[in-house]
Image 1 (cartoon, one colour):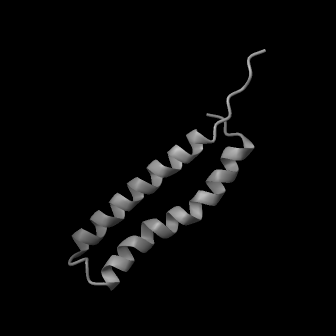
Image 2 (tube, rainbow, N blue to C red):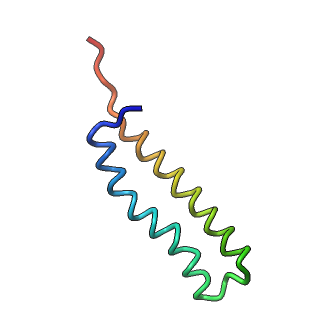
Length: 70
């Protein structure tokens, strides 16, 4: 799939926020005592990774501008 300039710009904007969410969410839960074990930590890490990837796909697909047929 070829990405246009708008989709590339969105990926550049979403990438740092996704990284902060993926690692920040489980770490904040650990700091506030919500995570009891490493298994919980890795579970939250995996879930946040899945959510970040899903949102990135939605952002990129939503930014696709249809081309006019000539």
